[in-house]
Image 1 (cartoon, helix red, strand yellow):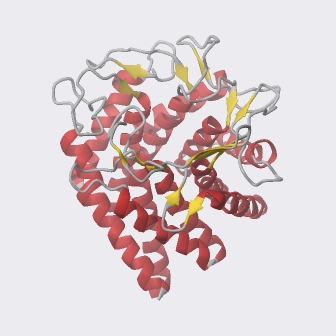
Image 2 (tube, rainbow, N blue to C red):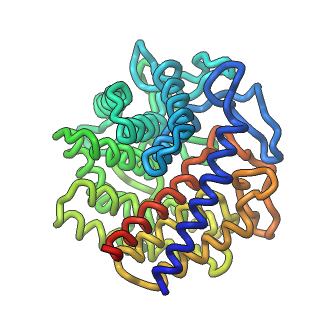
Length: 406
């Protein structure tokens, strides 16, 4: 029965990916005037030709279409991935000082030239996936360059971890925040998670000793510094000495980290570390369940200082919930985890997928209304979370079924 259930889930994911998500980005987001991709489409479907083009958006497009080509082999996915690769290398990469610009003008010229380490991480993620899918040496070369930029400028050799952001020439900047909603601290869980993620992917194709050492260190940082051992949740914001005075729970990051940590340890191949990480991954996934509503998806955040709950159901949180609980089921065999993954997938299909305009809406508000005020595509609204959800379930289920059939 479980095999039939997961096969049905995989088939649904394949349809969602190939008939809704990827076509939206190929048909509506390509910038035929200035090249690359548009900077924004509003929540109601209006193209915004005046919007800046974000490094995060373009790197995530690169990763998504590279992974789709690697798994599904369609030439149109390779064409979209190659278009994104050229944007990252030819326009976002800073040829004078290294790193990538935070944003470009609509015409494709440098706009905000700060070096946000989160953005460098996603550029590595996309470039390494392109090389993984195609064997392309240029993409690998630039991914390695960016790895060295992060290690040279961002790694804290004295107190460990990675600093958030720098100016174009790698000098200090006052405002290191990733977005307006973040707290201005010099080290964050979010940036560390999205260095862990690309380092894992890069290590798949480049077995470098320094990379291996730093990937192992990142896994240990999560378990020793970032994970709250008492609650199982991840702490989000830290000062230079790893002190955290902010009581905020991000349920989406909890469940996302639960499977990315496990994946990183699997790729390293250290059995002892893998077992330790597996236990931590289970703990984080179970803690995230505090935000899970049966039949209603995963809520966004809880602020312990004020007891304020943000019960909106954001698109990316739902996508990571499906993968996180599917991974928990695969790790443990727990049927309750598979039930949560399936339940959230049903919630996504009913409330988050935009059947008329394509792609997914930003969120379902706490009051049950669809949020079309925020972007359909843009600086933060990319095909990566929902595209990756589909690709992860397709790949994981196909491998499991192949093992069963053999």
